[in-house]
Image (cartoon, rainbow, N blue to C red):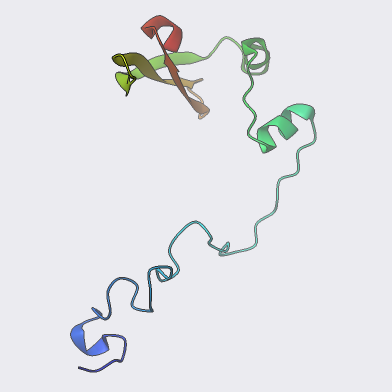
Length: 120
């Protein structure tokens, strides 16, 4: 059998990736270099710095002031999630809610709580 990377077998060489052991997966994964040089966004305000570090905005009044009353929300899915404890199973509810203004701004909210109403 030839060791040329599996070229004579239609690309099926020595397992996945074709370059070696388990650590090398052929360049796939999270550590990809950007393909082209893009202009980097620099935040100007404190709210922009919060967004840069992915900190959640927990005061709904900020969003109401910025976007206005045009926000519409829709509950997409409510699913029960169970955790096995020593005594029994603890059931919580996970809610997925989509919020948007109908003008191209969309957000997704995910919350897990003991009750459905507080999860939403």
